[in-house]
Each structure stands twice: as C-alpha cells, then as structure tokens.
Image (cartoon, rainbow, N blue to C red; front, side, top):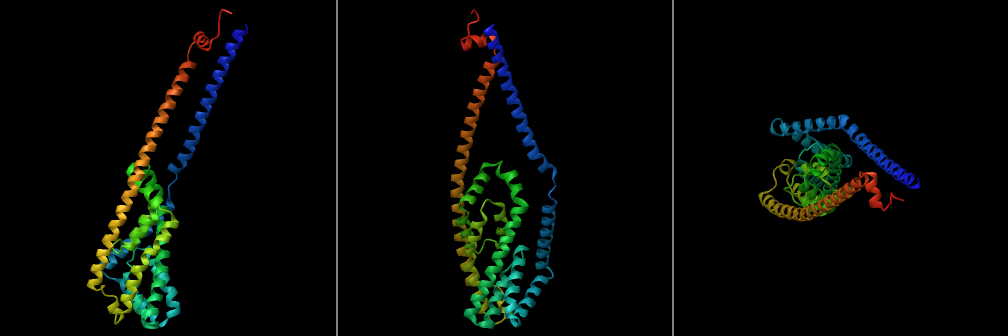
Length: 319
C-alpha cells in the first residue's frame, strides 16, 4: 500500500513538472509574441516622413547643381554679406554649413569662400584660423546630426535584415563597433572619401557616437588647407574656382593611401570578428545539441510504464 502511494506520488510529481514546464514554455512564447507583434503592426510614419523630406532635399540639390545653380548663387551672396557683417557672419556661417552638411550640399565652395572672406577681413593668418574654426564647428555639428539621422532611419532595419542574418556583415559591424575610431579617423583624413555620404553611412554601422565624434578631428588638416587656399586667392570668384592642380593631385594621392590603409585595417579587424562569430555559433549549436539530447533522455525516462520506472528506480513491487 505504501509502495502504491509512493508510485502515485511519483507520477503525480512528474505530471506537475511537465505541466509547469508546459506553462513556462507557453508563457515564454506568449512573451516573445508580445515583443514581436507590436513591431510588426506598427508603421514607422515618423521615419518615413523624415526619409521622404531628406530624399526630396537631396534630389533638389543634385538637380540644382546640374541646372540652375541656385544654391551656388546663394552661397556667393551669403559670403558677400559676411564681408560686411563679420561678427554675425561667423555664427551665421556655422549655421549654414550645418544645414549644408545635413542636406548633402557640397561644402567645398563654403570652405574656400570662408577662407577668402575672413582672410580679407582680419588678415590671412587670423583669417585662416577663424575660417577653419567656423568650418570645423559647422561641419562637425552637421555631421553629428546626419549620423543621428542615419541611425534613427536605418540602423534597426539594417541590423534586422542584414547584420543578424549574414555573419560577414555582422563581423564588419562588430569591427566598426570595437575599432571604429581608428577606421573612421583614417577615412576622415582622406579627402577622396565623400564627407556628406560617410556621415549617414556611419549612422548605420555599429560605431559608437563617442568614437564617431572624436574621429571628426580627422577633417581638420583638409579644412585648414582649403581655408588657406581660399585666403590666398585674389578675390571671391577666384577662391570659388577649383583647387590648383598640384594640390588636387597631392590630395588624391594622399587620400588614396589613407583610404587603402583604412580599408586594410577594417578588413583585418572584420576577419578577426568573423572568426569569433563563427566559433561562438559553433559552440552555441554544440551546447544546444547536448541540451536536446539530455531533454530527450529525460522524456524517454518519464514516458516509461510504471513497472519499468520502478525497475530503473530500484523499487521492488513484490514487497
């Protein structure tokens, strides 16, 4: 009688364990469904609106640069206004450069023109310093805003559709997350890397905002060079013309070298991260396989008839 009571208690406890496991699994699946369902149903209207406005502005800038050149004419009039309003012009220049950076407007015209305008007002030496500071502040603030816009608009989508599905892209993302400062500093030093485009691209990657901001120091050499060229020009029209050919050639050569170094470092770190990701996935799969085998053994033991369970547990039915 005691043995039958013991067997009944054992079966009852086994049923309770299975029931609790079933409830836990059901609750976990319900929580996962709750986490994923709202994101699937919710339409990101804010992101769609911002992206539409940004695409419209970029389209206008491209078309204008090929046809009417309203933006270029406006920059010329703005730089002429700064000559007679120096103090207010410095802050206004930073604001205009900020907007130009966010809207994909090429900033070379503003940079060269600022060198001439400030150089004419306070002398070449102080003019280059003042122009470089104004350009650096405006460009840095604009690039940070573009970075945040890129992260807000595309980061989640890229992580969900690319980073989590493809180990190679995940490795590149991890490399930029862990070593983004070195890579982006070299990219900033290279004048051939499109400044406005890389701002938005960086927002999509895993680089931290802190490393991204520190890497902006890399735009200073090119900024000072362009401001000096503008300050050395004989007039605003001359400053707005193309950079002299020797400087252009030197910039291209240096830019190619720095860009190559940046790509080499990025690929090197990405390869290391890729190997780590593959190793982690292999270890995870091996652990899950062992857990599944253990669960199967437990299920088999729990599914045995009562007599066989008693034999395995050492209970003697004859007593």
